[in-house]
Image (cartoon, rainbow, N blue to C red; front, top):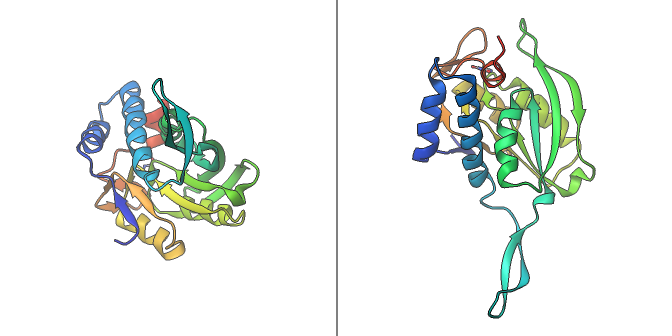
Length: 209
Ligand code: URA
């Protein structure tokens, strides 16, 4: 699948397997998602722009490379995106944060927007959209549709799990947006859940039902 980056590092795969277990506690599910998100941040920022600055070591002056984290915006799709956002921010603390509130209409499975708040000057920023589950793909497509109106420098999408249906919807609508995921599961069921999946990510992160 073009433009899909499967993050198949053993640490990511190990933690994902533990998260899938139905008896994983809220506490351990959240902690594992946090840890995986740090590792995903490592992959998604691999080609980030860097600049040279001068630094004085205790022995001499040299040049070193730094990133400008402030140019990066993590956009969390509420509410489950929060679970990935926290881990990403712990490794890129200077990043800006945007939120998009979208809920899935249970009958039509289409995305309905109820909240949209972004930092200023989005046209000079690189965006990483985060949502643990790329299922139907409808929320991701709606989020990227809205973000493209702001003309950002680039957009990437990070999830934990997806399925062929979600990847196809995203690629049919936004072939220019790379998808970073830890796994592509078998299929989507008629209720919009990924199989085998891990259940409702939001409920598992927040301990709701
Ligand atoms: N959202 C979830 O939380 N889980 C799924 O399996 C699909 C969408």
